[in-house]
Length: 246
Image 1 (cartoon, rainbow, N blue to C red):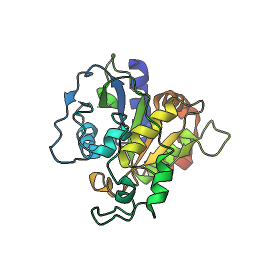
Image 2: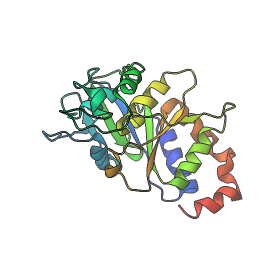
Image 3: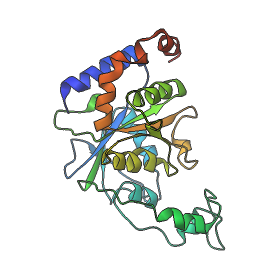
Image 4: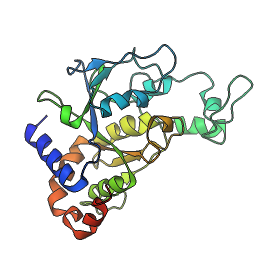
């Protein structure tokens, strides 16, 4: 991680976003990145709950063996399989499964699954670190903010600052972990990387504060966003009025 870029963002973040929570990051590697292995419970657990530790400053690393949720295994790129009768699980259920009712019919689920892309990850482990905990050897690929509406407003507007097309940010349907890992990682590989607003998943909501959503952006785009901060709306009285509430 470029130390100058890291320090520059921290300074500008405090300047324009006051005491708002610093973002976390992730990257794939065959190493541990000096992070602590997560100790997943035997029962199904949500990776979003584990990220509370990262938001509090603890760096963690996990792999396919330590991710216990089948959905997270797929969205983090560790597996391309799904549970039996998944189309019923995500929709109306059947005699054996209580459906989550996130999709109207099993047929809609099956059609949706056709669009799923396997992550082209570049390592067997995924390392999560808060921005200020990044070291010289770390190579963050995606930056994730857990943001309140005012903070989200600033990030959203900054992400669209250099865009002609109005959708420099999008909000895809998916699991909470999908909107902070899967989709932004795929955007990293696209010709025009976009940021992703997420954490609308009702199953993930218990693991975040009621007034928080996520904003995940590929590092390649985030570097440009940092460079634009001092010439953007952030220096205006308009933002100053918003900043007072952060």
